[in-house]
Image (cartoon, rainbow, N blue to C red):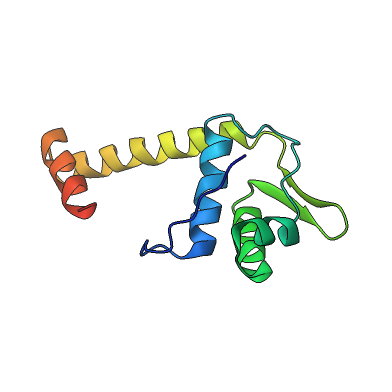
Length: 118
């Protein structure tokens, strides 16, 4: 798995690392049970502090996407590929239902999403 950091991004380095691992899990590049690089090794390769990588790994652990164990390293959590996609789909359905309850059309909801992301 290749991780690239953008030092000019407003997103923090740990957040960039976590986002790329999340994306790799979601698209199947990383499979359940697969071992992630050791934090020290990844930090060295990315030229960042090891604690930056550990923070990213900690966030992913808290989200239930990876298992992080001292001495064993970080592994993609069993079944992590499906819950991320299913969770996102459920959140989208909830958002559409919430918008309908307050009288927003799908087009208005799309406009609101565009406003929020620009």
